[in-house]
Length: 622
Image 1 (cartoon, one colour):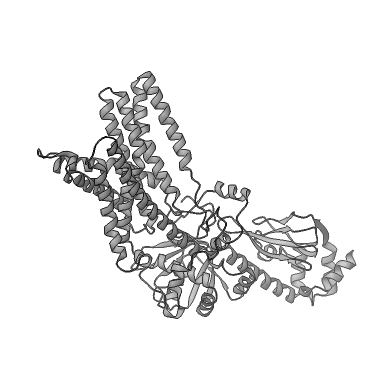
Image 2 (image 1 turned 120 degrees about the horizontal axis):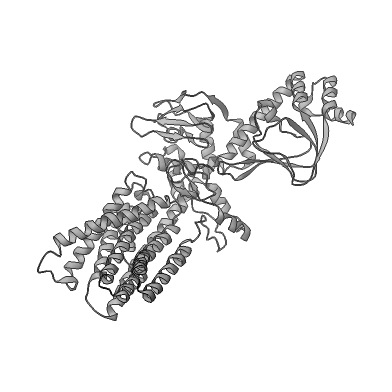
């Protein structure tokens, strides 16, 4: 067996020039090992003290992306040397290796490996170069900015990419430098500084220098290492070649430019990049009907919420009628006031792909209840109902005034809580508007119920609560969501790219006016009795139709932004629909939360479509 090993080593291309005596010494320390199909030869992140020459079978090299998803780097067969990177760099394993079938290999320990490296400069140089290439290939594979590039061509990209170590406090880029370098962060953190913008911290998987490269202007920021870090550096010619050859990558960077610098435009030398970024992000081939060709959205948990709160309301109603105890009457009042509004907000939120945390949504809901309701009440009492000649809601001026006051109060809450320019998507305005409207509706229902319950009429109080609960989706939440969408069209800088010409301003005016009109018609007592309820349902249905169209438009915009920045999702959407097990697994996974802007993104996304920074597993907090 020793002779066979020596012959194998002598004929190996990496060991040409190694003296036979050294090969014999190495062979004397080697052992033949066998692995069964599916067995792991080595695990990523573990200590490495040996490497293998593959004699028979095939192995698969795996690594984990930043979001924890497994990425296949290569499949290797006879003669391949695996596991050498950990020995060369004295570091933990950078990838895991699994047997695709029964594998036989020669095991080489660290001491024998180092002796071979000393005996043959060719062996050492070849191993160092191969390890460097594999390292860069693995780093590029973990970041999805290149996910649209086939893996075989990604290895070529690794060859033209330079790895650079950076010390803490080192400035690698200065504002005003020429646009000739693109940087990708393979490890560590960098702070981007600019005289005109707030500071931004980027980490593993992020990149910088792309704005100057895309606009062919001097660098707009300085980059300083916050700790010992490592970069992958690419020159301008290579960067331009990649953009010209891979349209999905062009669309990614067009979207990144719109996110980070919406005031700048792509240089004309890049052709139709702007058009690519807006239109070509729609998947070209639809998937089966169960997925609809869109990015997977969060499961409809609002149904569970409806059953829980609805069941609690039914139980409290029965106990309040049966026992006539004040405690159950108060419980029915509170739960009844909340069940409709909370469920409605959860339903609208389930249509959003890129939402903020539930805590922020709850803050809008509660702030509207605590601020908008008293504000509207004082304004109505001071300017409207204090007048002795008021004709009530049978006079159209009264419901119009109420609609204007209440919608304005709710929108003030939205404007205060959504300041800061992060309301990038139409769905942001719709969801936060629904939350503000329903916070108002919840307190209003509780106040109405309390006014009846205070007179001792439990049946009347419960009747009012049940009617308002059933009608709540038709009222405040819908109106404020519509009005907030109009405000978004008027002030969001991206609206010009999504709606051409003056239509954006037309929507900015028409949507708030529609909300006020719907609110006014809802309150206007032009008929009574059953026909009054029917008119309210009709008005509410009109509002729901407008809201449905806004949600549909907003969801499409989110899908386009996510797939433009994460083309791998688009490619997966065009593949065969996942099986039941995969669908259940996807639903069980929690959304990724961007550590920079706190946006919740789909579990399989790699980059946040709101701020453009890399998403990372295990960074949901912070």
